[in-house]
Image 1 (tube, rainbow, N blue to C red):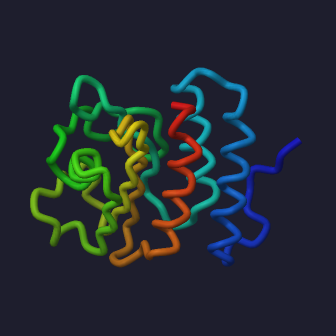
Image 2: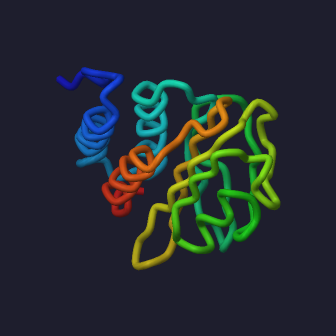
Length: 160
């Protein structure tokens, strides 16, 4: 049985290693992408303190469509290249945004969000989804968060 909680929440590298381990364990033998995204969204919510939104947008016909998440209701469709999520999906590059109000074209789904981290889930070089994290705190995310979420995205690349 897995304990789906970090052993040392203030130790960010350990927290992300445990998050990746838990996500791998819970998605290993499950072929359903939606179930896997739902469980991983919940894991992120419980492993990463200080979030007001955590979840997925899926690539559907060249645009992003809302997937499983934790937080307030969100924007349903985001075109590639629009906002932080669309930029990550279009470029295949993680977007770490210290202040969303300074990001050109930011799409405000939750008015309380101040910083955002979006990591593409890549398969064969193309984004099949993005992992989107929002915080109500400006400058909340850092390179450790990016690295941790990129490792998680790599695990999920064949499971969603």
